[in-house]
Length: 435
Image (cartoon, rainbow, N blue to C red):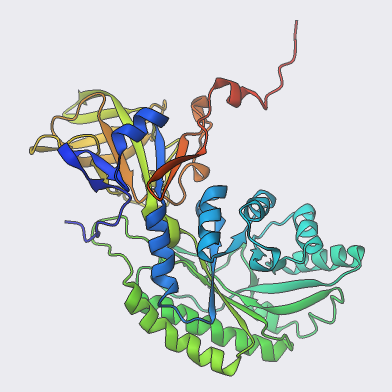
């Protein structure tokens, strides 16, 4: 049995029809079509406010747009008080259109272009630098603009902390500058006169579900920042402890206990803030803020049996929800899934839920327990799908295109991304006449 708590976007309604803020999924599917992503704004607010209310006030919460870069999702989080962490020029523009001011935006990523760096420096947006080569480019661009760039150094620590779904520090990585390399470069600031080094960032991994591990990560990153500050003579104006707070998707996982997490973290931050009262403390949050809010709804087109296994072939699949296929896992594990439009039979059966793609990999649920009487026209929902959905998926494969996305806010369903059709898919292409 799963240890997952019921904190997804849908709640049971009458006759087994599930609802989002009282709106039946069946009505949303009829209005906007399927496949369809639905995000519950109340769940996003609950996730943000639930942590914000308990977390030490010195910590600034940044929303990592990579988790879900929709401009309306970003605007909702900005209205709640979130700052923005972006990793591309389009994400930067998205955050700005969502109303996030420049002083509350940070730009990171291991392969920044000159154009991205230039855009940041022209607007005094803090850049998180990930290599010596990038630092040299930032210095060059800043000199050309006649200014000084504010730069936070991303560190790849010599230590690693276990417990994350994907380790991003403490090993050979394209991310950040190795701690040993930094300590061997005490003249780093002097060599880059158009750069003002203002602090440090480290990001140890993703999908942490252990409160003690997160607290240990944060404490070690703060200690690392203090040591590097002293050795490199870099003021601690900014320290970014990363984040990586997880969401429970699979059996035997549990969601983070936010009061316990705050209880573990706050003494760490309190101690650091007492020593460095002027330092801006940053935590990056993506999946944690939006993951629970999302539902990916597909309509079953056909049901069949093949060599003793049941298949429900739906109108959407891994082209919209690649995360559900289990990339990076040796064993396929299913996101929580359920029948949405009716109660279904009490008898349960194992169903393989697949999409319309011409590949056996297009399986978003393997041996999922669903009602035995599953039939064409039924709606199946993949829950906890608010993070790393369509933008992290091959939406153009077989030219099915991008699904519609809807945000339910204050009981009103708002279309926040239109569905692709043949014309929108072909619009960027250029047809030449070959006779």
